Image (cartoon, rainbow, N blue to C red; front, side, top):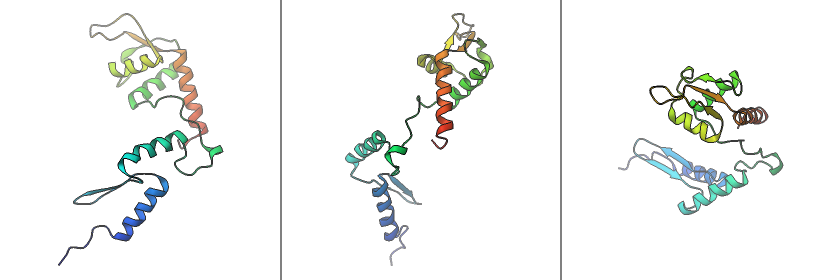
Amino acid sequence: MTAKALIKQAELRRLAAVAKHHGITIEVETEHYKLRMYPTSRSDASATEEATTSEGNPLDIPYHQIPPRPIQLKFDHSEERAMEYLMAVGADKPVDRYTLKNFGRHTQKKLQDRGYIGVSAEIDRYGNPDQIWLTKAGQKAMRDMDMHRSKYPVL
């Protein structure tokens, strides 16, 4: 006697049709295995992803209604919280570095490399700068991102 199938053939066909129609990868996880469905072969999957991202139309949206790409790279949670705090304070106003929560050297370096924050030359005994501030470029980038989010709230 054979065991009952975990996924029926009709379900597999339906999922394959959805993957092919929308050009997306579908993953089904059961108790014993994972099943991944690609819209094309594995070598063509990356080309399909590049085509959908370059065209910007993965969901069959009319071309004239496709929103523009976001203004900047996405912030992680630490960067976003720091930038929101600094936006509330204002541009070119120094703030003690330790007033920001979850603001480590990695977050500082990423924001500084983008040109969004400035740091003081004076350092504390741990090698961290005493003060940081929001630059005009950082203020403009945050305003642009806020305008983009208000215009396209789903994205």
